[in-house]
Length: 401
Image 1 (cartoon, rainbow, N blue to C red):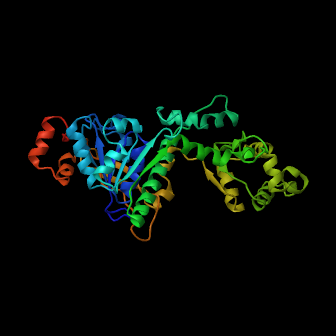
Image 2 (cartoon, rainbow, N blue to C red):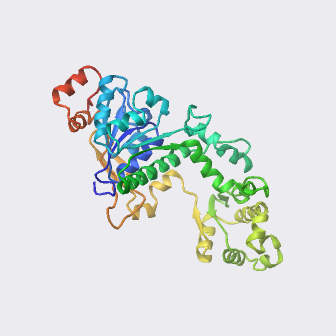
């Protein structure tokens, strides 16, 4: 791999989405990611659709560029193997609660004793200094705890809803990526490893309140929390005569162009609600309601052409199928077809960023469970006879492909 993290070895003890998404990005950046799995494998291996058991679609994306090593960490031999691997690794990432790592004898102090320079990164529900430290956490729970469903209700939806993506898992995963990268940089300058905590709750609260702290920013408060523009009922894709269109008419120039295009060039002067940015912000619900009413008078194609001519930011409302055939994504080569050794032809996504040097590239195909057990243990100094003994005792597993 030629990416910027080429030469960095990461022990990936994460499962489901949050951690594997983070380590997938780190693998795309060039790191050698060794995925440590139980004999049952990551849960996402078993979520279809899939062609082969244990090779579910989400895992095929999140598992790319990684090597799979099965270890029973509850067995003394499995723990010993993990610590031997840690001695030669740069980073260990996990996403169970720290109490569970301590029960396995794999706390930071345990792993640090094998490698004082290791970067030890835990991603889990809540920061360990608070009373919720031991509480369980999944994406749905953290969306709810972080206020995301309540925002849907405040916007006028009849019932609160979860965002239909693993929002908190993936945004926390991005915090993991920069934490690993920054900790590696810090170690380059100081020679010191460290333990890093990446809690989901604090991550999503920062994400939500970055927009919605509102009047509670001040002491005394200048009003309730919430950003009125984002919570406006009609802030949504606008219904047209035959579909929907996404548009954001934002600054004075764009509003002037909009009113001119629809034949109302004097409205900004005669309607104070639209006359300035501050006035529009103070009346945002009425402003968006007006736009919603006007948008229903023309077709999607007519609006997109008008906005293009008027230089007003607009976009169609794409479906998942639209994205897979999107001309821009095709032009930049975002999707590529890959021949997986066992799963046939699969579509994979590219790396969103482009670099003038050390350009990241997606790694090889996602591995079967235990596909790399023997080679990784050899790299840790195990002889084949020792590996055979670990296989016989069920401490490790080799893939049957």
